[in-house]
Structures are given as C-alpha cells and as structure tokens.
Image (cartoon, rainbow, N blue to C red; front, side, top):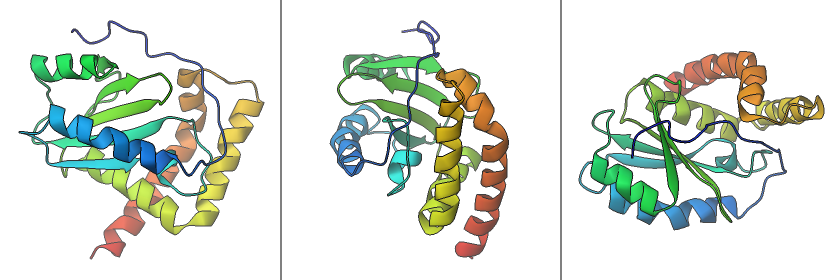
Length: 180
C-alpha cells in the first residue's frame, strides 16, 4: 500500500495517565514482532503513555528498530492487516510512521536501530521517567495547548515544538551522562 494514502491530520485530546497503557503495549508487541521478526533489532514503548503519571493523548507509541529505514511491501501489507495506516516519513526525516485507531490506539515509529532517532526517543522517555517535575511541566503545557482550543494533531505538535526541542536537548545531555 503506498504511503500518504491517508491524511495524517486528526483530532486530539489529552487525558490523565491510565495504568492500562503498558498492558496495551504488551498486547500489541508480539503482533508487531511477528511482522518484523527477521529484521527486528528492538521494540520499545515510548512517548507519554510510557511515563507513569504523565498526561497524554490516549495513543500508545511504539518504536520499532530495524537495521535500515525501509519496510517491505509484505511488511506494509501485514501492518494493514493489523489495522495500521501507513504514512511513510510523514514529514519527519529518519522515521517511518503508521497508526492504528479503534478501541485501542497506537502510533508506530519505525527507525534505524541505535541511531539518532532511536536514542532521542529513549532519552526523552527515560528522562521524563527520572524527572517527575519535568514531566509535570510537560503535562501542564499539553493541557494549556488544548485549553487554548487547539485540538488538531498538526497544530498541537507545532505549538509544543519549542518545548520539545529544549526537552530533547536536556534529555540528550542527561542520557549521555547517565550511561557513561
């Protein structure tokens, strides 16, 4: 299935943390492992739903690490059979994106294993887990953006971008020191 057959824009909402999110990840993980089994180098629960106590869009983010930034036609077809829409890079270099919407919602990032996008996502997740005050500031920003009336994915992402850029820098510095 060709990329960009679907529109990436969607409505968003922010909700308090829900303890079921890690279980949603664990339920989806073996399905995705079966799609990428031969090439899979890593799979991680990332994003706000992976940080206990952090408000989030009720969408579980999963990162797949592959040896290269491509997926085969067969893998795309398997994702489609699992209910995923495939978007290709969707405007983010170094990442392929797919999403699944329904009773449980998932975002899938496919990246090169142990390269920059992989480490950036882990750094942000682990930094927020280790710094609850920083996570609370991030949650407050999310709620403020939505309170301003911003409810579309693209506008929401744009409004939080300056904070996320700074967070990525702080997390990267912390992550590199934490694992020396």
